[in-house]
Image (cartoon, rainbow over all chains, first blue to last red; front, top):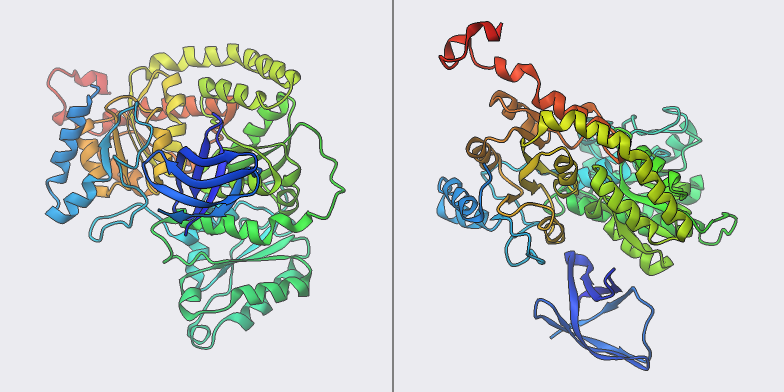
Length: 70
Length: 490
């Protein structure tokens, strides 16, 4: 259950940053990205997958969340 | 001679042959030939791992990162080196972080404050002593805006509760008291110390004036982060930013102060120079206060112009026009400078082994002078630093992470660079090998190197190092090549 910061980079891509590991990776796919449901499975550029409990609405980024490793 | 990727790989293999098999295997993961097309480094280089026993590393400790790098330059705090006396004394004022003020009155960077741990403090704990020191210091230096407790190794080992002391003392003296858990044994290098110090800033300092709305902000407020004002770097950066019409409201942490750190939240943009040591706090401020951050590079006219345009793009047209005007204004001076030094430095080959940002940031400045960087490495970088390095370096250049002294010497013997940029620990070894050397941690007692003004000093320094006549005097006359006439040496 790592603590992760989600933010947009300069190119507008969603970036996944594991604070403790200084590990930054772009998000290639997000399961739910609609304004009323945001989260679910997150797929990263390096192939790893995480799960974020879906939020009731699209959050204001950057935001630190706890995610589950899949 | 520029090496292609295969030649570099072969060189790495040959250097690694000396090691025992297990060590060689480990070290091989830290060395590579550059491929500028790479986006991600985690597949091709291993970084931020513990140095191997038996090979000499150039790294420092968490205390060095927290007290020496991040907290040391803050001018109005009293940094107590909590523990035995040595750590504080030998790291005192060595990094040349310039500040303005009167030493011992309103600035305290060049004074060593320590709790001077003795056996009895280790046995009975040092918390009482620490509380007493803080009260005493407050009486002696009333203009100080805060106190930080920089833990040395024994504090973590004996389990003193410096956080409790900090909370209580902060109430007693009515100032910021920051416990920094930067015991030297934590982590693999000074890099963790940067992180710990950033976290202490976040938890104990940053929010101090969140209720205070008296600060009159403007739409052009920016903060400089990750600039430690080595030899005046932050000042020459500041000149440029002010010339393009921005207002610098805080400097983190070179010539910085507690009040300006606490008002940083009014900034519209955080300008991040040293990504490695201050990205943590910049990310936090982005999340908490919504301040975007931008990495920039103020080494050499090409990169400066690029960065100024990037910075200006965050603001309105006046700033953009100002940026163009400033770039144009400096161009004749820079052209004259390059015309003067380029013929003397053209084609010279440079090898770099430094810390946080420099192995990638200074490459542009060398290239402006017609020099090429044939190898670069970091002492304590993480993979995200290497991600940023690949595209700056030329194809086939040698990259080394946490190079051991043996590796570095072997690379130099084989590559025969015309200039090496590294630290004091390497300096005299390479001087004895007869190779021009600049200390790129502290600008070799020179500087500033940031900004247009800094580039003039940079170019002069590189010229006077490489073209110094002393390098021809290293061989005795009878050892010189026959063809060389003796009269030329006289």
